[in-house]
Length: 419
Ligand SMILES: [Zn+2]
Image (cartoon, rainbow, N blue to C red; front, side):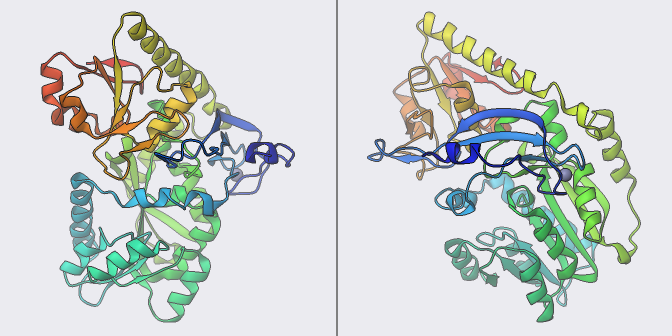
């Protein structure tokens, strides 16, 4: 019996936020393998588990979420390694964050900065360099060891209410508590958020970054949906969850990362911080886009189907014209796109990726082989479909020679574009 069959007899799903029954679909992306389960060469014959990838909206609290049908230990198995591949631009983003937060909140040698999902200390290292005390919370032992080697003390745990109570009991409360792109990955969002006020000092600040649902909807970024992302967050929905646990949102910033993210600032209700006008501006924009009412989410699935139709038409036209198509960037989001569209290696010859860990593997589901980008020096496909569209400009700049010699880049999202 496959995992998918095992779930069909289960009762209707309930909201991960408020517990209400879920009846409204945002988009149903069908049965998909885990987006990060790249297949090593030599293991092609092994069966590939697939799970439903069905995104719903809660009519009651408006939390957008995928049915949680995958055991967490399956998700955070091999795929977790890919978390630690950081780009230069991301490290710059983190360094600037450390500088700005230190200045804004007056952090110094007596302050404690805690990061949840601190990985290899990629971000806390900048606070260490500034002489500020830090503590990382990171369940993956390998990267936690790497963090310790950099001078970032790290406890090896998943974060939740229990961890927060233990640390607070030891007197290790945070002046600044950071979570970058982890909230959407949390299987029990209430347990996670409940731990935040517990771990904060009375005037402590929590910052959390997440891809903004408003951009996902507007730009048809359905390929950012995969099983590892349990929730897709609007400020409206986050505000409801935070309020439930005694947290007040007092500021928000827009970031360009991951196709458009929010950085939300929150504190304990009793901290009494003044609320920035920016909070109201983002909430107003979300309301204007219909995110404050269940029916506002209709129409998204039709846009997703159009992306599929356009990509398949492009690939069919290329085949008829005798043109060859390869892809650039073996990103997880590419796997959602390719598998939803049913694209396999008979349409896309291979995908190139600079990450050696992904080379010599096949993409999950589509089974397109991953190769070193140096292959492009000898083999000139007519088109390169860029899968991680969020770093499109970086990829085009790195491959100027390909374009100068007549190669064309293609992106599928938000709509098919050739340039
Ligand atoms: Zn709900």
